[in-house]
Image (cartoon, rainbow, N blue to C red; front, side):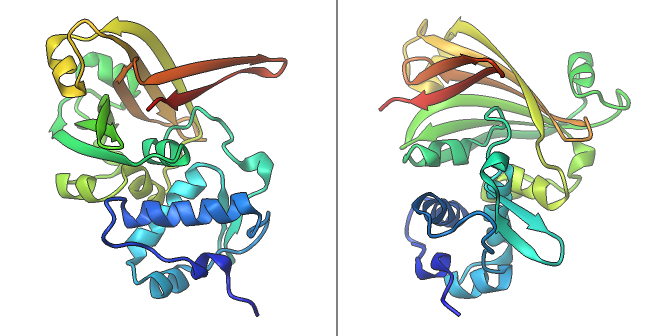
Length: 261
C-alpha cells in the first residue's frame, strides 16, 4: 500500500505558524494539487501524531478547522475523508480567521488582550438567546494580525455553558473553534452586519492607523445546525487593507473578502 501523501510532508517546529495550522496547509495543498481526491481517507489521528511528532490535541485542532471549512468529513468508526466539492465551504460566511488568512498565503496571528467571565447586558442576553439573565458569558478581545501587522480588533461573546472549562491559557494556545468542535459545536450559519465607521483614538492606536481613518464595523451572530446561537462577535477592520467583493447571482448573494499587502 502506498504511503498517504500527507505523511510525506514535514512540519517546522521553529516556525511562527502554529503546528496545527501547518498541518491544515499540508492537507489543503494535497487537495488542491489533486494528490488527495474526493472520498480519499486521511491518515488516522495516531498516524498523524506519530509521523509529525505532535500531540493528539494538535491533530484534532487541524481536523476541526478543515471540517469547519467543509474540506473533510468525519465518519464515526471509519475515519476522516476528503469531502465532495459540494460540501466545501457550505457558506463562505462561516468564518475562521486562521483558515481565511492562511488560504491567502499570509501568516495569521492573534494577541489576546482581554479575557473575562461576565454577567451579560440585556442586549447580549437577547442576541445570544440565553435561557436567563443569570447565565454567564465569556467576553474576550483579540487583536488579529496578518503577516505581523494588525488588521482586526475583535470582541467576542460566548455562553459559558457551551464550554464551561475555558481558561485564558487554553484560548492563548488553541483555536477556540477547534475546542468547540471537540464538544460537538460546529458552525452552520452566520449573519453579518457591516457598517462603515471612522476609527477613534484607541482603535486607531491598536490597529496602527491615524484617528479618523476609515474602517468596517462588523457584527456577527453564529448558529449551529440545530439553531442554537453560540457566538456574537463585534469586529473593527482596517478599511485600507481589506476589500469586499459582492457577487449577485440567480441563486442569491455571496461575497469575498481579501487582504491587501
